[in-house]
Amino acid sequence: MNVNFFVTCIGDAFKSRMAQKSVLLLEQLGCNVHFPEKQGCCGQPAINGGYVRDAIPGIKNIISSLEENDWPIVSPAGSCTYTIKNYARYLSEEPGWAARAEKVAERLHDLTSFIVNNLGITDVGASLNGRAVYHPSCSLSRKLGVTREPLLLLENVRGLELLPFHAQETCCGFGGTFSVKMAEISGEMVKEKVSHIMDVKPDFLIGADASCLLNIGGRLSREGHPVKVMHIAEVLMHR
Image 1 (tube, helix red, strand yellow):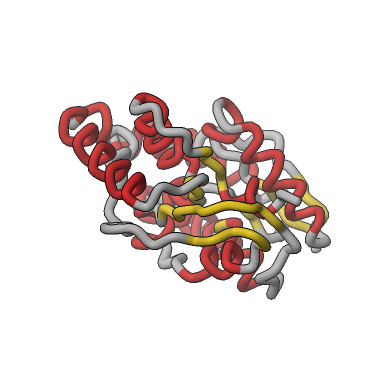
Image 2 (tube, rainbow, N blue to C red; image 1 turned 45 degrees about the vertical axis):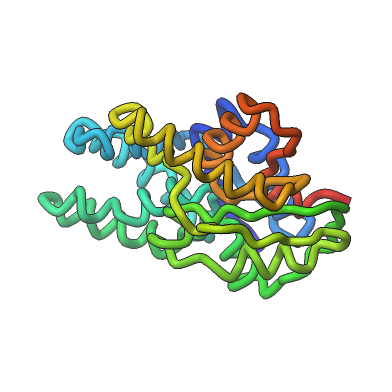
């Protein structure tokens, strides 16, 4: 199957290993991965900051770049996926562009959702020995409704024990620009999240949204906790 890969800014600038493992995973599962070269930022920071009109040129660029073909589009970040899926609402004054945005949105999938629901795979043959907690990001679980797919894939990772923890579905406090505008509140939220995680003493923190992993991982590191932070694509490619 031919697929397009949307790398995301964090995947390009901060978490290149996440992007690399996502592509390798898709290829291992039989996909021919295409990278639309003109893709850029999805516009989420500007949109969340209230600068929607300023984000429009970038939004149109993303739409155009993802119209190179009619193949499925796969992204390893729920927050970016959600943003692109909602492009049409920001283009309501330009019906032609809004219609194009809706067609792109129909082809866009989160990585785990695509693997489980489109490829029909729940066991990718991964193995990782240890105890892990999974953080369900707000964008992925609440906004996109992707909840069972990551867990189905992780439950089939040999040697991995998934640990439930208190307030598991609570926001980590990142929220993009929220962590800047409401830094004190954001800091308390991630502090509480880390406290609950450390109650079960995991070896690994796993998530499907790199922004959340940067936030929680940063707090874990500052507090000196020896917990390895991994994007789910890294886990699924581990042998």
